[in-house]
Length: 107
Image 1 (tube, rainbow, N blue to C red):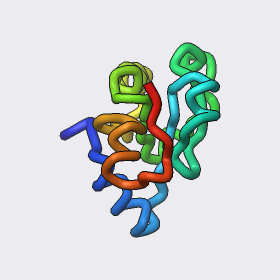
Image 2: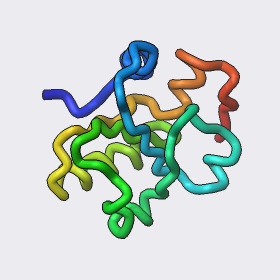
Image 3: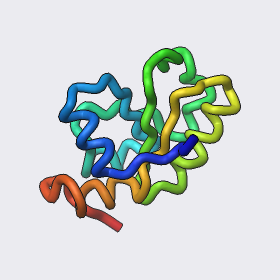
């Protein structure tokens, strides 16, 4: 089983109406500049004490800027017993390039 999802796969699933919790693990300053519609911000450093905000029965797609922090977040959630977790390949940067050019890119 793959623990990654591409921006195109995520967009297609959202368009189909699949119930997916989009977890943004970036910092608040990043979230304020660029976000995926409907994403919920829980910075990576706050994730361990925020597990009660997540539903274990809903698929979670974690994302960050390029996919490194969200890979850590996905791995952590899997270790905590979450089974429906994926990492968005390329992060919000890839989302902006491949899916939604209205989402600003940043360094």
